[in-house]
Image 1 (cartoon, rainbow, N blue to C red):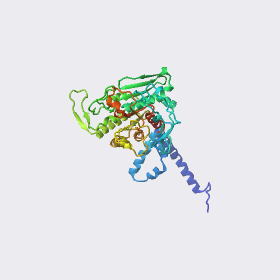
Image 2: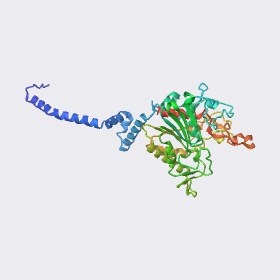
Image 3: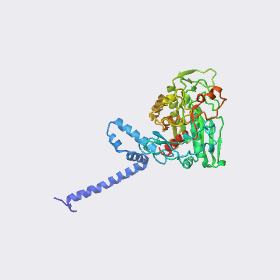
Length: 441
């Protein structure tokens, strides 16, 4: 039975009285909430932001033990940071690993530039100029499984670099990637608006005046200070590195908006790395032998620490390029005994191929240090995809820095370069991957 309350009943008068009393309380409560929201608006918005980014599975997982909840919150925060990364204009599709795929022969897809069109390529990499008879290595396209690489848009890249400084740091492999990036962009800039400051100093600068932009390469093969830091004369019987010396080179890197690091090849000598505690200029040096993996880990910790202290994650991006493979033993891909990359014209088609010169112990160090670090560095994992490209090396088609012996001339594979890569070529694919991670993280 429904009971109606008449305005004259005692019960109705009690309700109205309670309602009148509650009004000031409600007003005070609402005012307090509004004040707190204004005062701590950023925290509130951040909280809601994290909440609405939760995936259903993560919400379910959050009801599990505390350790899982903390892990999921960490993942949420990481995703939030990635969504707001500088330079990003989109996002790579979920479950798309752009580093996992295959090489596809594509005669319809021309190289993005011709060797003769780009005067900035180091003579160590100009294979056509030095007589390579084929150009097949230029017509292989990297195709990720289940997705596509975004097409490299030079105009977009150049506009993104306006008033910015892009810096490649490392060894000659990173110098090749630097040259590739310059070649990909320079045609958009008139001759009078660009200049290359190229010398044997550690820093090489390509300047585009109208854009107030520089693309730079800094020679530091170990990233730390070493006895191989002279960009023109860096041959040394022993690899000697000064412990804790990241700021020796790091002071030059400050102020860059995009930094691409690499370091690997110079660590692989088969011998322990010599670490010196004092100055490399001391007449008497006290050194200790350190295993390659331990020394490399020290370098990774140093670079992560430097990035944390010197790069603003809200304005800058940092990348690390994994090790570039070599192809010195053709028996590893089913070739003849004693052969190498010389005369190779097609990629390796075995998806499980991994060369012995690519040390998995070093990859493990990179994985361990980067995984446990909160420093925002994007890994360009080029090792596996590059390991298939035994055909893309400079081989014998490059400038030789000294006269060849009769024995070398009689046996070309004895002096074939199976470390560096022709341009145009594989370095351009590395920059396509860099482009994808920069704009579509």
